Length: 257
Ligand code: NAD
Ligand code: IMJ
Image (cartoon, rainbow, N blue to C red; front, side):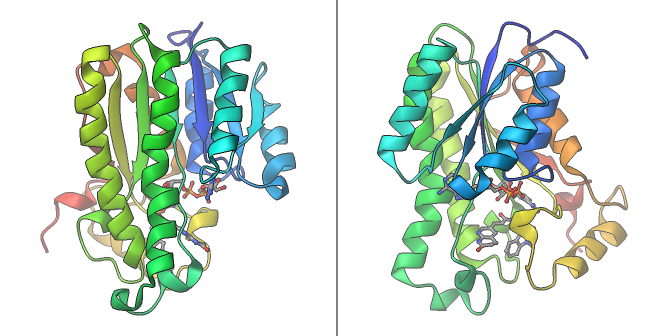
């Protein structure tokens, strides 16, 4: 454990269980001394998030479904009261209706399109807007999680690919807005990892096998490797990086054939 982030405060959105990428990000930040707040999206997830957060002394656990403006306001009121400031926001939230993540993309419903964008893309901007006042004068860092399905066609990723493209474009526009205030905004494009969000995805094992045989590093990545890059993006070492997407994918994205 180092102390490069001692005295700093972070908000981690998207812990569902110990396999969540957000949990690896949290541990990497807490390892450097950052004090953290977590959200839970539904009451069903509350107990699990509280148990995990208890491993990191001084953590807060607060309700927040990112589609509910009143819950977002409540979360930031608590943060202002309890922390008074914010240095890092980690956004690791995505959702599309399960029926949209199979079959033809052109069958996407209007409602399914809207939900995927609201939860997976707009929520970054909604949370950033509330985070900015708490980051004023503190060199804040905002990190979100994306996937190569935004740039290339990945069977079944469907509407999530379109939402991730909007998320990555949002990163660039937010970086432009917030750079003058000393706040950086970046995305990490992670390779496939077995989490709750990957469970039940048709063909997931085949995709893992494909990465292991064709990625430059000839292996898959794990969530802790994403967490370490997230901590880098929240640290002084990355002070010159904003508006970027960094790949943590064993190099797979460089391959043509
Ligand atoms: P996960 O299921 O552990 O995390 C997704 C989180 O989103 C959950 O905690 C869930 O509660 C939260 N969420 C969904 N709807 C919400 C809402 N309305 N309000 C608040 N929270 C909500 O899975 P994960 O794989 O850790 O996913 C985290 C991020 O990483 C996502 O953005 C995902 O797209 C991205 N990602 C995942 C992979 C992968 O292969 N697992 C690869 C690249 C990127
Ligand atoms: C998700 C769907 C289809 C293919 C997929 C994925 N591949 C990968 C994922 C190849 C790696 C995981 N991923 C990158 C995601 O962003 C997942 C988002 C997601 C997953 C679910 C499953 C359960 C559900 N809704 C979801 N919404 C978003 O009901």
